[in-house]
Length: 354
Image (cartoon, rainbow, N blue to C red; front, top):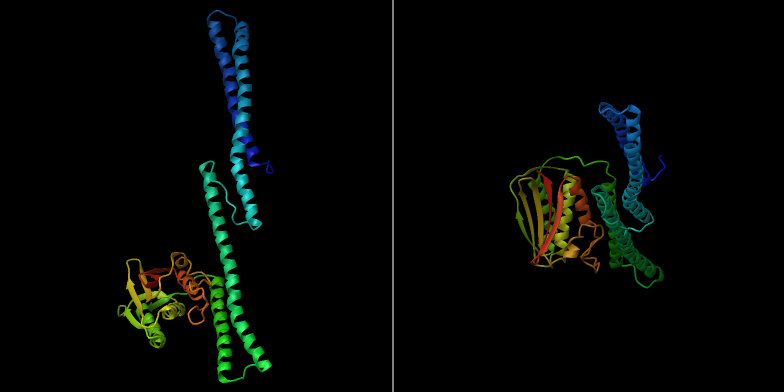
């Protein structure tokens, strides 16, 4: 029985139910009904033997014929219902095998009873998630390879030129070599931060902090870069704002967001930092004047290695990991992140539980 398909099990269960019902009906008609009929006929002056013969020739024959028809109908209906319910399940199984073989575009139609349709919805949602994860994995590998290849190619070119005597080993050359090596170091540290977040066994340890003071400290650290870029700063925050967060993670989130804002703001633009309390959480937003981000790009800015700046210019592009780290750290603390871009202003925000 354990090895039978669901269609067979449903058919057997339906047959068992029909058999029990027919058995009860037959016992009631043939035994109880026969006795009642005999008693009534005897009261009317007929003999018991003749009454029983009449009952058997009429009612019993009809009951047996009806039972045979009912059994055949039950078998047909049970087989039909079993196949009807088994077909969508077989489709789910076939789609699951396709996904196991790497075909993440496999989907199943939403049909059948509500429970089967709900299963199809859940399966399709899982398949969409797996397909998206596979796309992100491919993009991650391609982008990581690019980020590593660019500085390594530059280092290789400089070193070959130095070896062949094409260029002289002056200060500018060493500064270029150091810049490429520093780029690799920053990339490895960012990857380490992502890996540590992925491998974390549980949520980070939160402790009481003054959110306003933490933001003010992060802005002070970023002030020299803001001044060098010739930008204006608009800071709006309360004198104090109690919160619960991991201080190190919060400092990293603020540093990444401020660094992005400075990098993508043109000379003479403005960086705006605001902190406010809302009914259910605390909101920190960092906005900067910049070219608008297309909606398709805006939905993906928190993906690892994704960058709106397709030129991969060293001065502006970064490695495309900063916002991914922000998202990971904020969500680990129970908060949310988001980005908006319109009317020449790009705003990235994150919230912390109140």
